[in-house]
View 1 (cartoon, rainbow, N blue to C red):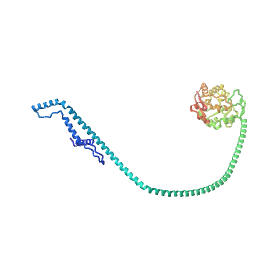
View 2: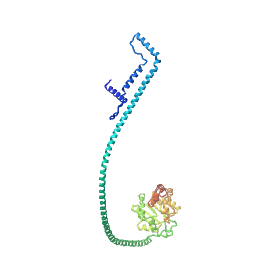
View 3: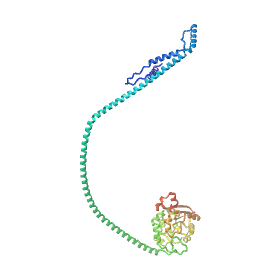
View 4: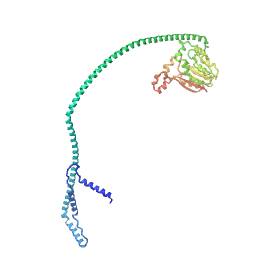
Length: 469
């Protein structure tokens, strides 16, 4: 067997012996009873109990064999006699084992008690140390108390003195601030009166400047009115008499009874200025690029004709308003007074390569719109472009704001109907452009859901662009 194994066996034996024979804690003088003599006696008794009923071994031989057999027979015969004694001996051994185990438990309890006594001795020492410190503090407390009360009294006196000094300083500062405040108020009052006089004079100057501006504006308005009167006199002199016609055209025509108001001023206010109209019509320039014979139906003040002239595209216009035609002629534009139906009927078929018609079809009687579309389609050359712009009836906002402002409007034209008419007379490759979103002029529509606004309040106008097939 190796040395390490022997050492391990000895260690285990030592631990078992210590477990069966615990020692008391260090520092506690408790003598534990020695149980080793009892254990030796118990072991000897156990040996004797184990030898009961056995036969002593002897050396071999016939005689010895007979003697051993006789002894075994005798032991069996006497077994009934010694059985109780054997049982008694075994019970005595068991009793000694129980006594030994009880003594071991007593030793363990005494050992644990010794450990606890050692702990209590340590705690008691700590408590004694704390008690000594408390006794020292109690001995010194009387002196500390007298000294503390003395210092407290001195500090209270110093505090009261400091408070009195601060109160005096505060009162002095309040007096200085009050005097400074009076001086500041007095100075501000003086500055206020001076500024009031100065600003009053400036206000008077501004008032007189505004009065002078208003006077100049009034004089400019008077001058503009006089200029308009002179311009209308020139227009009346330039305008040629309209040819007689039995057909009724869009807007106030020469055969219609004159309107009770100035229609040009009406268009200026509710349709917009010429610059505004031109800005909206610039998107049509690419559609008429390369054209050589363009007709503007309902040319009005000539915004589209001016745009075509600037783009070097030959164009002429017709309108039933003599004053509108006169304005176009004063601008050097090719325009004449004519009704759309006889004028288109007088043109040779296939001679136009572009027709522009803005804000006209809503003035026509509904039953005459197909006739106008037919005449336009017949006068267009192959590939010629036609653009028709009109209010969008799918936008409900036009009925609340724009459409019924013009008393010459008859009824709006939905774009599916207009595109159907164009298809019927040979116009195809059509595009639909929605113009002037309603939300730009009526921001309150922005609070509506997008899908609802797109369906009922989308664009105020639309334009259909098509080409002759």
